[in-house]
Image 1 (cartoon, rainbow, N blue to C red):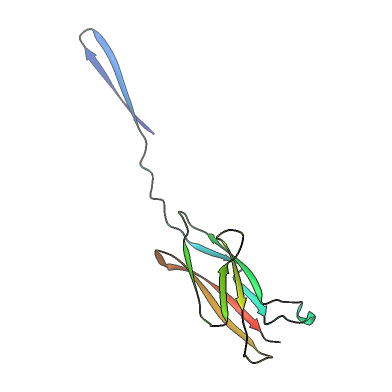
Image 2 (cartoon, rainbow, N blue to C red; image 1 turned 90 degrees about the vertical axis):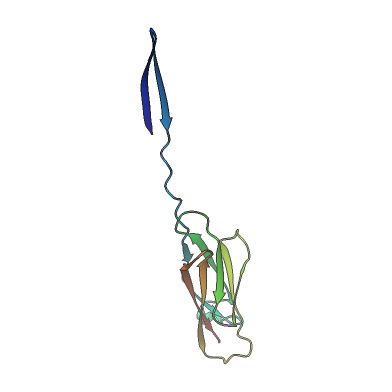
Length: 133
């Protein structure tokens, strides 16, 4: 904070006048996006005990690694890959796989790209692997 003071002399009186200025706040910056975890391995409909009981549902946390308010959108690149904000506030995302009609014994891969609204150059990619037992 800067202070400015001026000595005023009027007739026989001496007065001191001071004012204060707050510095101008820097720009607030912009949000950025981060995921945890950055990959999921899921099974459809559910894998056997030999694969440690992996399910067809997983969860990812979307967080702001920048400043400002984060508003995001998401786009899966495979029709068998779905997501929804299910619980725990706007940052917890439920990811589901649906392997109906797909070949068994295969592992399929896909991605969900999360993008900062108003900053399309800021993205984070969730890799998803679907195992078909």
